[in-house]
Image (cartoon, rainbow, N blue to C red):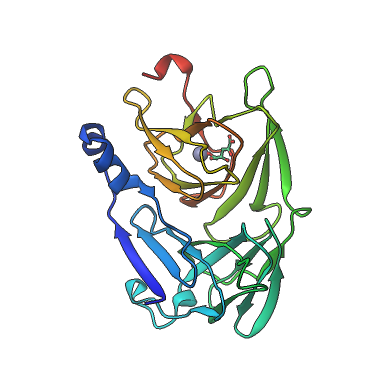
Length: 280
Ligand SMILES: O=C[C@H](O)[C@@H](O)CC(=O)C(=O)O
Ligand SMILES: [Zn+2]
C-alpha cells in the first residue's frame, strides 16, 4: 500500500493530564512520517488537519482519492500546503508541474485536482511535508520560495531563542482558507522555540521538527499551562497541539521546525501569552 491514513481522535485536557508517556505519544506524536515510496497521512480530528509525508523514489506518488474525506477527490473540499524538506522534487497539480527545491512550498487551493509527487533523483528523494485543512472557496495555487516568505525576527542569544519565523502560507504572502504555515530557523546556539509560551484555543497547531543530527533530541512541552508534560522527539517527528495546549520546545542541538495551524481565524498574532508564573 503506497498511501496509508491513520486517524487521531481529539484528546481533551483532563484525559491528557492522566496519560503516561506512551499514552501521550499515541495521542499527539507522529513518529513515522517519511517512508521511501509511500504517502503516509495522519487524519487528526483537531480541526480535521491532515498531516503527512510523501517520499517518491522511482515512481510518481499520487494523492487523489482518500476515503477518509468522504469526497470523490481529495481536494474537492480541502486545501493543501506542501513543503519540501529534502532534495529537489516536483509536485504536479491537475497536470501542471511545479519544481520544489529545499524549503520551498506549494499552496494548492480547493478543487486543484490530482496531486503527483516525484523526486529528481530516487537515490536522494524529495521529502514532501503535507498539510491539509477543510476549505470553503478556491484560492490560487502559489509556489512559495524562501525569498517570498515574510520574516519575523524574534528572541535573543541571551535567552537562547534568537530565531526567524518565515511565514509561508500567511495572508500577506499567499491566500488560503484556513491554513497558516511557516518555518522557524534558529541562530547557532539558540535552542528554545516559543518561550514564553502561548495557547490559541481558536486554532490547532502542529510542529514538524527537522534539520537535526541523529542524536539530537527535542524536549517538546505541551499541556495546559498549569499541567505541563513533555514528549521527546527525534528528527522528522511531528507533534499535534490542541487549542488548550502550550507548544514549545528546546533542542539538545541544532534544529528547525515547520509550524502549521488551522481553525477559526487567520490572524497569526491571535495568541494568548502564558505568563511564566502560570507555568507549572
Ligand atoms: O502560533 C504560532 C506558533 O506557535 C509558532 O509560529 C511559534 C514559533 O515559530 C516560534 O515562536 O518559534
Ligand atoms: Zn502557536
